Image (tube, rainbow, N blue to C red; front, side, top):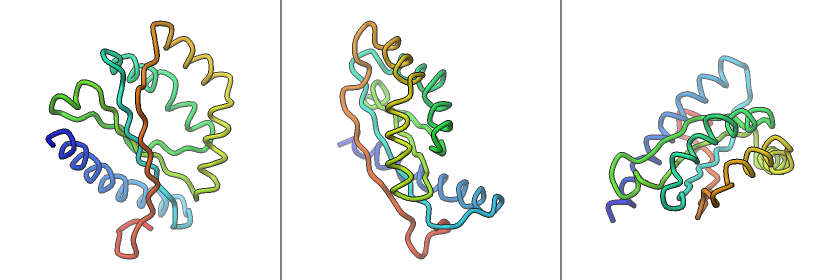
Length: 143
């Protein structure tokens, strides 16, 4: 129950921050409104969260950007047990079709394949991935 509350609180905080940040980015860059967000929650295998974070820090975020995936933010829960194995992040895309194309390109990227293989020499880092696509409501500060 506590883990679920932590994940919900982190999700709400992330969406709030993402909304303001991406909204200002869109306005500053003259981008159209209507972007979609993808909220992803990774449950790392036991003892693998530090390695997962290193992979994101050193490789994944840059490869995401290379394929048009906007890094909005990354969070880890502050309370155990979720703090021991959970990484939550939000990406944004112009639309769902762009997300689909970006993910396909990312998964086929030789740089990603190499980073994944090298980071998993001592076993898989992630045991579970949850993904939810979100779009802003008509009353949201970001659309």
